[in-house]
Structure formats: structure tokens, C-alpha cells
Length: 353
Image 1 (cartoon, rainbow, N blue to C red):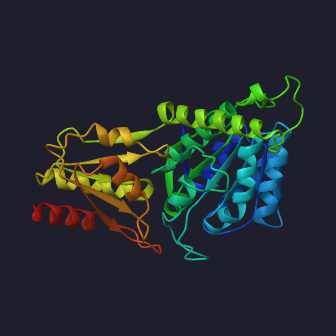
Image 2 (tube, rainbow, N blue to C red):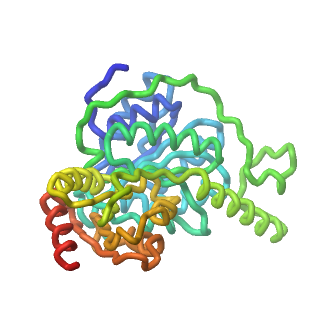
Image 3 (cartoon, rainbow, N blue to C red):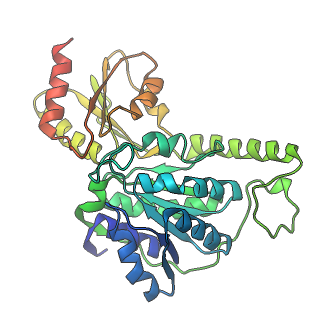
């Protein structure tokens, strides 16, 4: 198949169009601005609709309307902009409406830095809105993987009638790489099949998250919890890289993981037995991959994040469960790791044995 050279944000947007997206609403914020810019040109070419909302809040509510009408809908933003959308994202979950949200992450808290960071882990995986709902959260480490995961996110949104989130840090959004784009799909109105259908009349024609009596709300929450358990069993994605004989395990996602992979290659050539667990979904988190490690060999786990304070390390510690020492290597505010820095950190771990 033909490869094309695209910037990450533009590749994400084109992947959405080819996955069948025909509605986009968003509001400008760095470093994701190329996504709405691209969609403003591209969607009219395929009979779709682009709206620049007056705010992030307005944009996510427009997505709710488009999804309720049966259209595959997308919004994108970056970190503080996602914070403004969280009420609407919770509404999408409560209404059982499929949509895809792209977060090209930057620094924080507050307005923070416009440079690449990975400081939205807690927001993405634990509390992207009120009410205890969850999303499948994808974290690509290459532009090609971003393309593939955007298509997957649309498929899963429709399958589960729920919002899905793609967290591509600012480096992925800004870099250019050759990609193979998926074929253009035939656009069909989405067919709703509510996961909680047993508490609704068969001829349901409205979307609502107001449930009465209270027993229906609890039943609804129980059914959604069952769906999330199903995700834990079937939707977790992970790359286990050179873990079979590893003595030290790196764990990282997104841009941090691609730098870690370079460092592992260099360290292996020097005789160090290093491997990596790379979450591709940061929700569900790949706890099972850590259970498979041989802790008679693995004594150290190094969590590499572009976040201060560390965030993913809390899930890593739960996964390791004190079977090995867990340490961190951290940056934030747009400071990117170098492979030399990671190599020195690993050698330092060996020196402490």
C-alpha cells in the first residue's frame, strides 16, 4: 500500500475521515490546531460538517447532538481544553452515545506549557468527568499507530455506544512520519444498540441519562460496570518488548516509549538485559503483563514519564505489587528525554545492586 508523509495531527484527522467521521466541532488550542484546520478543509470535500464552536463547552455539546443524530463525530483539544469538555464527555457516557475525543497533550497544571507532556494520565484514566464512567484510552507512540488507533477508537465507540479517547502527546502531533492510511469507508448512519437496553422500552426513541425510579439508575450503573470488566478482559493492548530475559524493565507510553526503545537497543549491545512494557491502552492498564514477569530475574522497574509529579507510576506500583523495586525518571514542561539519559539511569540502577 502507498505510504504518505504526514504530520501527526493531520494524519489523525485524515484517519478519522476515512473511518467515517462526518462531523467535527472544536476550538483552537496549541498543540492540536492542525486537526481542526485540516478538518475545516477536508470534511466539506466528503459531504461532512465542520464547526468551530465558540468554546470547548459548546463544541462537545455539538458533538453530543451529532452523535444522537447517528453521525460519527469527533472533537479534539489539548489538556486544559479537555478539562472544559469533561462535563460533555460525562454526558456522552451517560447518554450512551459514541464519539471520539483526541487529546494532544501539553503541560500543566492550569494553562501550563504549550510544549509536549504526559500530565493528563489521571484525567484520562481515572476522572475525565463526573460519575465514575470509563473510556478506552489509547496512547500511540508513532504517527502510524495514531492513525490505526483513531480508526479503532471509532469502531469501539460504535461497538460499545460510548466515548473513546486518544491521548497523543504533543510530540506525536507535531512530528512527520510516513504512514499507510486506511481505505475510505462507506458512510452509514450508526445503528444504536444500547448496552443497557434491558432497562429501557423496546421502542426507545430518546437519549437521556435521567433515570427513574432510582433502581433503574443503579441497574444502569451495574450494567456499565459489567461492560468495563469486559474491557479489562478483552480490550487491553500492550507491547511487551524484550521482557523474556530482562533484569530491568522500563515502562513508558507515547513518545517516552519510543525513546526508551532506542535506549534498550543501545543497552542490549552493551550487555545489559533490559526490556519494556509499553501500555498501548492506558485504560485498561496492562496489569497482566507485569504478572507475567519473572521476578527472580527482574529486580528493578523504571517508570519513564513526561510528568512531574509521576502519575502512571501509581498503576505500575499496583501491578508490580512489591515484587520489585519501582523507581521513576521524570521530566515535564516540554523537556523530552534523550536515549543517553535513559541509558545512564539504567546503568545507575545496576550500580545500586
